[in-house]
Image (cartoon, rainbow, N blue to C red):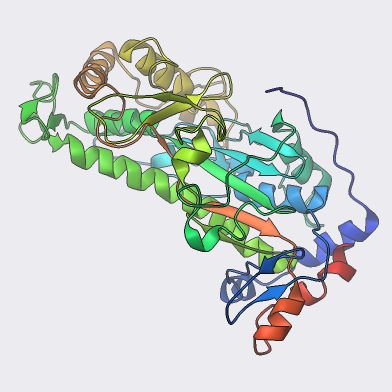
Length: 435
């Protein structure tokens, strides 16, 4: 796989006019008009009551349409405001956030462990925005968004990994049966959010530890080192590990679904078809299908007789989780976790710009990770890794939940099979508006 930069985005005058109308599209209309509109130009349903074959050719998204969807799903929107107050920390600022920037979707305590891949007819890409600093790309000076800066910031983050679309056989178990006719269809854009659950778990262990709680191993019914440390405010009341890991899975999944939900809302405003769905096998996408002919994204995959499923851990040099083999051991995982927060550009670094009137003073006031805290946190991470053979111990290291697919809609299908109102006026006018 290569790492070729993407070309600069050119926005035509017609597209600028269309974007101006897009920015005025009502939020309520986007929410109420959201539907899963799966039938694209060039599509075909071969049998059944809704059988139909498109008379129009496959039409990939334009560069501008693609950038708009990706900006809405992945974009950096300004500075993370952090957690303003916690009586147990005062006068220190809580030290939860993982990044200084805010994005288009929420993250529990600002952990932000999600990154993005996408694939279309032009290839497969990685789009990292997790630690990107805001660059004024969505600033509104009264005359509207700077379209070139907004979309340009997104396009600049594309990293092309392959000239081919991710290939999955159109059959089960790679695709759910009801998606075999349409998922990852030619002409479509498929956005794939991916969460680092290893890092998210470490963030949660740190969160509980900073608030005086340890964890215990409820799977094997034994304590986890440091969980009953006498210096913890709640030393006698640890949380069960399975709860913390399910909490981690749920919080990260919220990032995944809300990011693509934003994109789904945009599709109606753009007049594009598509939907959010989870009907593609995540192991096949990541590269753990077990079939060498179906490499997916090519993630490194670990196997262990203790686990019910193989465990993808990351894509070397692209998306590496805080889990072995991408880190040497628990100590390095915790070091990198702490460095993301306090290192250059991190939310706890006084030199990092931010939203406050005296940003250096606010950032410098955050509660530090002292040696005792890092020792206890490292002990917990090491125990989980050694006991279960991976991080996290009871849920996957990498999580995929919902995908977003965007495509040009064939309104003829809806006119033929549906009553009026099956698509929005933006869908009916899309070609004349955007092309």
